Image (tube, rainbow, N blue to C red):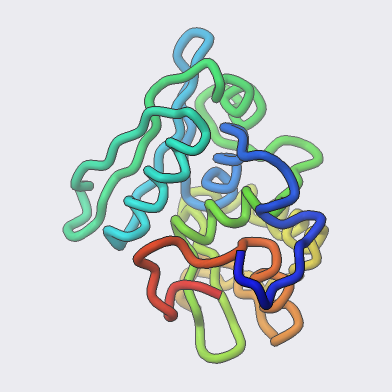
Length: 194
Protein backbone atom coordinates (compact mmCIF):
# COMPACT_ATOMS: atom_id res chain seq x y z
CA UNK A 1 0.00 0.00 0.00
CA UNK A 2 1.36 3.43 -0.86
CA UNK A 3 2.03 5.73 2.07
CA UNK A 4 -0.31 8.42 0.72
CA UNK A 5 -3.35 6.16 0.78
CA UNK A 6 -5.61 5.69 3.79
CA UNK A 7 -6.46 2.15 4.87
CA UNK A 8 -9.99 1.30 3.73
CA UNK A 9 -12.36 -0.88 5.72
CA UNK A 10 -13.38 -2.51 2.43
CA UNK A 11 -10.09 -2.33 0.49
CA UNK A 12 -7.59 -5.03 -0.31
CA UNK A 13 -5.97 -4.72 3.11
CA UNK A 14 -9.26 -5.14 5.02
CA UNK A 15 -9.24 -8.94 5.15
CA UNK A 16 -7.00 -11.86 4.18
CA UNK A 17 -6.98 -13.06 0.58
CA UNK A 18 -9.39 -15.90 -0.16
CA UNK A 19 -10.03 -18.15 -3.17
CA UNK A 20 -13.57 -16.72 -3.14
CA UNK A 21 -12.10 -13.37 -4.25
CA UNK A 22 -12.12 -14.83 -7.76
CA UNK A 23 -15.80 -13.88 -7.72
CA UNK A 24 -14.45 -10.57 -9.05
CA UNK A 25 -13.55 -12.28 -12.33
CA UNK A 26 -17.05 -13.73 -12.54
CA UNK A 27 -18.57 -10.24 -12.19
CA UNK A 28 -16.73 -9.49 -15.43
CA UNK A 29 -16.13 -11.88 -18.31
CA UNK A 30 -14.78 -14.77 -16.21
CA UNK A 31 -16.28 -18.23 -16.27
CA UNK A 32 -16.62 -20.95 -13.66
CA UNK A 33 -16.89 -24.69 -14.34
CA UNK A 34 -17.74 -27.37 -11.80
CA UNK A 35 -16.43 -30.92 -11.66
CA UNK A 36 -17.50 -33.11 -8.77
CA UNK A 37 -16.79 -31.24 -5.55
CA UNK A 38 -14.40 -28.82 -7.25
CA UNK A 39 -14.53 -25.84 -9.60
CA UNK A 40 -12.16 -23.73 -11.65
CA UNK A 41 -12.31 -20.11 -12.77
CA UNK A 42 -11.03 -18.83 -16.12
CA UNK A 43 -10.89 -15.61 -18.12
CA UNK A 44 -9.30 -14.36 -21.35
CA UNK A 45 -7.08 -11.29 -20.88
CA UNK A 46 -5.62 -8.90 -23.42
CA UNK A 47 -2.23 -8.08 -21.88
CA UNK A 48 0.60 -10.31 -20.59
CA UNK A 49 0.90 -8.25 -17.36
CA UNK A 50 -2.73 -9.11 -16.58
CA UNK A 51 -2.02 -12.83 -16.87
CA UNK A 52 1.12 -12.55 -14.72
CA UNK A 53 -0.74 -10.53 -12.07
CA UNK A 54 -3.57 -13.07 -11.95
CA UNK A 55 -1.03 -15.89 -11.50
CA UNK A 56 0.45 -13.99 -8.54
CA UNK A 57 -3.03 -13.45 -7.07
CA UNK A 58 -3.85 -17.17 -7.46
CA UNK A 59 -0.62 -18.20 -5.70
CA UNK A 60 -1.39 -15.76 -2.86
CA UNK A 61 -4.63 -17.71 -2.34
CA UNK A 62 -3.01 -21.14 -2.49
CA UNK A 63 -4.44 -21.94 -5.94
CA UNK A 64 -2.58 -23.54 -8.81
CA UNK A 65 -3.17 -21.67 -12.08
CA UNK A 66 -1.86 -21.44 -15.63
CA UNK A 67 -1.90 -19.18 -18.68
CA UNK A 68 -1.89 -20.20 -22.33
CA UNK A 69 -2.42 -18.41 -25.64
CA UNK A 70 -6.14 -17.92 -26.25
CA UNK A 71 -8.07 -18.45 -29.47
CA UNK A 72 -8.18 -14.66 -29.92
CA UNK A 73 -4.81 -13.59 -31.32
CA UNK A 74 -2.66 -11.70 -28.83
CA UNK A 75 -4.82 -12.71 -25.86
CA UNK A 76 -4.05 -15.12 -23.04
CA UNK A 77 -6.30 -17.56 -21.24
CA UNK A 78 -5.87 -17.62 -17.46
CA UNK A 79 -7.39 -20.45 -15.48
CA UNK A 80 -7.10 -21.93 -12.05
CA UNK A 81 -6.80 -25.65 -11.52
CA UNK A 82 -9.90 -27.44 -10.31
CA UNK A 83 -10.01 -26.92 -6.56
CA UNK A 84 -12.39 -27.69 -3.73
CA UNK A 85 -11.58 -24.16 -2.46
CA UNK A 86 -13.52 -22.80 -5.47
CA UNK A 87 -16.47 -25.20 -5.19
CA UNK A 88 -18.56 -22.59 -3.34
CA UNK A 89 -18.20 -20.22 -6.31
CA UNK A 90 -19.32 -22.93 -8.71
CA UNK A 91 -22.42 -23.65 -6.63
CA UNK A 92 -23.24 -19.96 -6.08
CA UNK A 93 -22.66 -18.75 -9.65
CA UNK A 94 -24.07 -21.53 -11.82
CA UNK A 95 -27.69 -22.27 -12.68
CA UNK A 96 -27.13 -25.50 -14.57
CA UNK A 97 -24.30 -24.52 -16.92
CA UNK A 98 -25.30 -20.84 -17.10
CA UNK A 99 -23.40 -18.20 -15.11
CA UNK A 100 -25.67 -16.14 -12.88
CA UNK A 101 -24.62 -13.94 -9.94
CA UNK A 102 -25.78 -15.03 -6.51
CA UNK A 103 -28.38 -13.09 -4.56
CA UNK A 104 -26.66 -10.47 -2.41
CA UNK A 105 -23.55 -10.20 -4.59
CA UNK A 106 -21.03 -7.97 -2.80
CA UNK A 107 -17.92 -6.51 -4.42
CA UNK A 108 -15.22 -5.59 -1.91
CA UNK A 109 -11.67 -4.41 -2.55
CA UNK A 110 -10.16 -7.84 -3.18
CA UNK A 111 -12.88 -8.86 -5.66
CA UNK A 112 -12.74 -5.50 -7.42
CA UNK A 113 -8.94 -5.71 -7.62
CA UNK A 114 -9.12 -9.03 -9.47
CA UNK A 115 -11.73 -7.62 -11.87
CA UNK A 116 -9.61 -4.51 -12.46
CA UNK A 117 -6.52 -6.64 -13.08
CA UNK A 118 -8.34 -8.85 -15.59
CA UNK A 119 -10.44 -6.28 -17.42
CA UNK A 120 -10.03 -2.74 -16.13
CA UNK A 121 -8.57 0.35 -17.72
CA UNK A 122 -8.56 4.13 -17.75
CA UNK A 123 -11.03 5.84 -20.01
CA UNK A 124 -9.77 9.41 -20.19
CA UNK A 125 -8.58 11.45 -17.22
CA UNK A 126 -11.65 10.96 -15.01
CA UNK A 127 -13.10 7.55 -15.87
CA UNK A 128 -12.30 3.87 -15.49
CA UNK A 129 -13.99 0.93 -17.23
CA UNK A 130 -14.52 -2.61 -16.02
CA UNK A 131 -15.29 -4.93 -18.93
CA UNK A 132 -18.20 -7.37 -18.80
CA UNK A 133 -18.85 -10.66 -20.54
CA UNK A 134 -20.56 -10.12 -23.90
CA UNK A 135 -22.83 -13.12 -23.36
CA UNK A 136 -23.68 -12.21 -19.76
CA UNK A 137 -26.29 -9.52 -20.50
CA UNK A 138 -28.92 -10.92 -18.06
CA UNK A 139 -26.56 -10.35 -15.12
CA UNK A 140 -25.27 -6.86 -15.99
CA UNK A 141 -27.89 -5.13 -13.83
CA UNK A 142 -27.07 -7.23 -10.77
CA UNK A 143 -23.36 -6.48 -11.15
CA UNK A 144 -24.15 -2.77 -11.56
CA UNK A 145 -26.15 -2.88 -8.34
CA UNK A 146 -23.21 -4.48 -6.53
CA UNK A 147 -20.90 -1.74 -7.83
CA UNK A 148 -23.30 0.93 -6.58
CA UNK A 149 -23.53 -0.77 -3.18
CA UNK A 150 -19.71 -0.61 -2.99
CA UNK A 151 -19.92 3.16 -3.48
CA UNK A 152 -19.13 3.00 -7.19
CA UNK A 153 -22.27 3.84 -9.17
CA UNK A 154 -21.34 3.28 -12.81
CA UNK A 155 -22.71 3.81 -16.29
CA UNK A 156 -23.39 0.71 -18.36
CA UNK A 157 -21.78 0.92 -21.80
CA UNK A 158 -23.50 -1.29 -24.33
CA UNK A 159 -21.76 -2.93 -27.28
CA UNK A 160 -22.40 0.10 -29.51
CA UNK A 161 -20.65 2.37 -27.00
CA UNK A 162 -17.50 0.24 -26.73
CA UNK A 163 -18.85 -2.17 -24.10
CA UNK A 164 -20.10 -4.19 -22.59
CA UNK A 165 -18.50 -2.51 -19.61
CA UNK A 166 -19.25 -0.43 -16.58
CA UNK A 167 -17.73 3.05 -16.67
CA UNK A 168 -16.96 4.70 -13.34
CA UNK A 169 -16.84 8.47 -13.82
CA UNK A 170 -15.64 11.30 -11.61
CA UNK A 171 -12.67 12.06 -9.40
CA UNK A 172 -14.42 11.15 -6.15
CA UNK A 173 -15.56 7.77 -7.50
CA UNK A 174 -12.11 7.07 -8.96
CA UNK A 175 -10.56 7.93 -5.59
CA UNK A 176 -12.97 5.45 -3.99
CA UNK A 177 -12.03 2.77 -6.54
CA UNK A 178 -8.30 3.41 -5.98
CA UNK A 179 -8.86 3.13 -2.22
CA UNK A 180 -10.58 -0.23 -2.72
CA UNK A 181 -8.26 -1.90 -5.24
CA UNK A 182 -4.92 -0.72 -3.85
CA UNK A 183 -1.66 -0.15 -5.65
CA UNK A 184 -1.15 -1.35 -9.23
CA UNK A 185 0.23 -4.84 -9.75
CA UNK A 186 3.74 -5.22 -11.10
CA UNK A 187 3.90 -4.39 -14.80
CA UNK A 188 0.63 -2.46 -15.02
CA UNK A 189 1.07 0.83 -16.82
CA UNK A 190 -0.74 4.03 -15.82
CA UNK A 191 -3.33 3.60 -18.57
CA UNK A 192 -4.53 0.35 -17.03
CA UNK A 193 -4.79 1.30 -13.36
CA UNK A 194 -6.73 3.76 -11.26
